[in-house]
Image 1 (cartoon, rainbow, N blue to C red):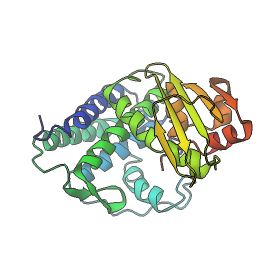
Image 2: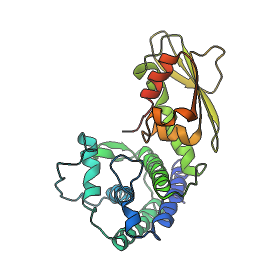
Image 3: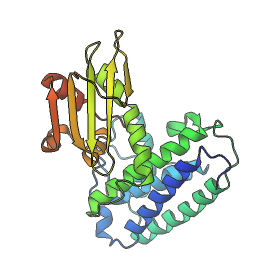
Length: 274
């Protein structure tokens, strides 16, 4: 157990998801590693490569020196270029090479997390080399591996763990971006409220309220007269908020009530992950 209780839920969630990923990929045939996932441009191999790469960076390993091909359509900005290096450098690795590196990386990272002595407020390296607190970095890793676990499950046709510890971390992180989506991106009018009602393995209701200055805040109390109510299942919410699917592709799984134009604008900007 880590020294700091505030880190433990994220370590537990990370451990649960990373072990699930290992169990999913160990028995795969070479061809199954090439299956497309909902993560744009990435195969099963690519998703696992990304996980290995980021975890090794958290361990302090140097990033590979590697030049990306110019024909990768999903690489569109500095963030995607940064993330793609760890992926492309492993693109021709065999199944045994992938599973061996994943296993070794998980062992090293598990040991690092188990022996963590730093204060949660310690600044550490985050995405793109920026500095974030250790607590946020650990939380983001728990979120990332759960989201990618779901990518792999979708690609391999093995659903599961939609209510695991990582799912709860993902719920809170994805919801944190909802006020900006409603108030800024979709332009909900001042004084309005938007209700999100999610059912399934994780059930919750949240209301985003837009104040007179156009700022959005969120709470768990219902609104008596919301401008828009969005009703969907948990899996659909995750896929939309994580940018894994376009709204039109899941229109039959999303029920909207109220201002149709505003509802469409919210759904167009619903993705909150990079």
